Length: 225
Image: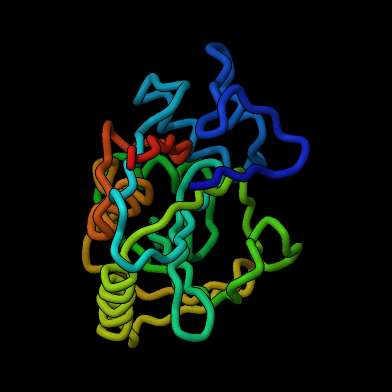
């Protein structure tokens, strides 16, 4: 398991950056338009530190590398494919997919169920996202690298691909993010957001999630051999 951060970032541990009690560092570092929803979440949650811990599976029989990307306020998951890698993400359709990141949109996304987006982006593998300027058109604050069983990873890719194809008539391409979106069947709510969904996907890969993944600043608890 490896934790990698953007060059120049400071950290107090390899797995988690502690936040200032007055103004969280993760919030100070975000562009204003991307900080809106994160700020509202922080007010509601009262959290300024780590949100949840990932415990990877112990000794997977056929290990493959996966990446959990921290985008400052939300997470996404990178899984291997036969010819590269694919990044999946989840979020509010208007706020995330369409890019309408005003206060009103963020407020509505928190306080009532709103249409949700499933995002898919094909990536080369390697290189590592932080080693390739321009590979992603979204901020990457930190990358958690861990290993899971190849069969579970392939099954999750198949599941998410099937979910994507089922909603292909709602397809929307965001040139801003270079991500293809379709409607996700489960609405976006305060209890069902991007970090919660990524946590659910990690559990399907055999990981254990400790705590509530409200924020995207995951910790990793190494599995003892």
